[in-house]
Every structure is written in structure tokens, then in C-alpha cells.
Length: 304
Image (tube, rainbow, N blue to C red):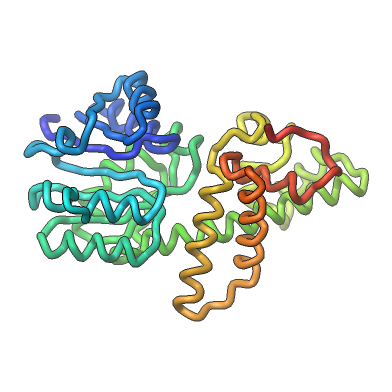
């Protein structure tokens, strides 16, 4: 394949996503402001560059970004030296960052004005999903842009959903992650209650997986160690998906709710719980470590 994919942001999620594209036979170059992340990408066989000017060329067919916040996406795409002013009309733009809807729309509008196809395509599934190419990808953009992006998205994810126009991908992701944050707290409360009732937690976990109390945190990503191998709870809560990122997404959900006058009392409560957890220095731990807050001294296990 002669055309080149440019990938910006090869952190915990971006690195395995870019690696899967490389393994699928695409020519790909990657950039990150972190030298440590670039070195890790190089270890995976990825071609790295030291700046965006070396990343974007006339042969760049697609640009994929995986960045922490809306301000980063805005700067990368719309800044003085932004991507939209560098790429050709035939280049496809894919922003996999989870950011606020207004910024997605602003980037999409700027791309549309230059007749460039752009989608917002945030992902769900964490580092495990990125490594296994089993991510859920929620897409906002035109039907034309979605169809053009689909072959690349299928390399990185298992379930690809076209949610609607630009901004809808992030809207769907924000709703999903608000539910995830709430259910992770609920799973923690349930399992910790079982502990205080002196019931075998493994048995309660097995029951919940097959009963009406099941959820993704129970079935796939339990917040307590010893239940499912390979989860962050079995690795001292190394993320995964960090508590800081969950806190960011819950903030986005609460901001969205205010903008449309929606009532989300559990979303507000979840934000308060995660904000306090992060303020206490746990923002780099996996978000499932919130169980330590819920459990107190009911369960003796390390998160450091």
C-alpha cells in the first residue's frame, strides 16, 4: 500500500491501535510529544517521526488522532500549524479521542469547509480491547466518510457503529462511559456488601454474572482481584483505563447534561466519587480501583 497513514498519539491506547494497523499491512508513521511513547512504538516496529511536519506529506491518505482532551484535538487540527491546513482534500481525518461534542463539531465544520472528510470515532474497550483489536468504535460523520473509514476502523475494533453526524460519536461515547462509571461503582458496592455479609465473593460474582445483576464490570472487568485473570484488579490496578480518564468523561457527561437540561443524579454522584478519588492521588490507577473507596477496610488488597 503506497499511501501512508499518519497516527498522532501513541500512548497506552494509541500504540496497540497503530500496531494493529501496521500488522494489517498498511504503511504507517506515528508521532507523539512523549519520547518514551515514541520509543515504545519503535519497539513494536512502528516508524516514528520527531514532529508533525515530517508526519504529514502529499502521500498521507489518512490521519488518525488519539489524544487526551478536546484542547489537544483542537490544537492539532485547527492550530496555526494544524492538520487541516496541511492535508489534501483526498485525506481522511479520524479523531479517536474522547472529547467534548462542541470541539468535534468545530473540527468537523472546518474540515467540511475545505471539502475534507472527517469523523469523530472514540473507542471503548480499554487497553485490552486495543491490544486484541476488539474495540467498540462509535462514529460521527457523513455516510461517505464512515464508509471510507470503515476498513481501517475494522482493523482496530470489532463493533463499529455509525451514530450520526459529526459529534455523535463522542456523544454516544460520553453516554456509554457515564453508564460504565456508575456500574463500576455499583459492582464494587455489591461485591463489598457480599464480603461484609461473609458470603464467598467468588460465588456471588458467579451468581451475578448469570443473574439480573450482571454488567460489564461484573462479567468482564471486575473491580476486585481473584475473579477474572488479566484484569487490572489482578495487577495492582495498572490501567487499563485510568481513573483520571473516567473522571474526565464523567465531567463531559455532566457538562452535556447541563447543556440540554437533562437530569443525571447518578452521573453527578459518580463524578463526585471519582473526583475525590483522583484528588487523593489515584488518577493514574485503573478506574476499577474505585472499589477501594467503596470497600474501605472490608477487603485488604493493594492498589499501589
